[in-house]
Length: 222
Image: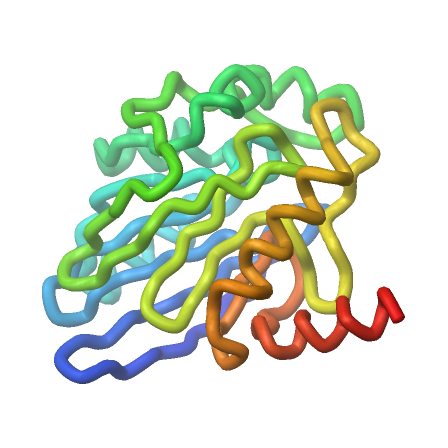
């Protein structure tokens, strides 16, 4: 199963290209994010159908500069190996999830799904670190809860949050290493830091906004 959605965000002197690949039995969202001016791009959370991602890079004349994992679960890192072999791009992850990503194949097998271990990360991400993608700039936010090393990438008007939250619901906290308290704090970090029109790209399901989720969480707690 795979589908591709595309949306372009026009800014003053740049265009952010976002392509969404929905793959696997868990319908995981993998994202290709590129600067259409400089032709640099990153892939966030690759799992399956790496050939389709490579074809999209080629058809858009994009150069992959990094593979970024929002967290270490198998459905967000199992494409790291194939994508790195094909492109040579470095793998970036928070150190608290590095060991989890390197055991991805084993953990996938425990739930009878396909997965591959990630190669060791080339760069460990930390709170406040900045990642340049051409003229686009993304800031790393450490947002644990779903996993200890979960991160959110904050760009100009967009957030890529992995499994921290979904459209209308928080991420799950019933897996080893999860923390309900950390998850709530991380969600609040997004809800009260960014403008309501900020787009949120989640690890599963449709895109949402800070305003939409802020309203949902306020309603849920009343």
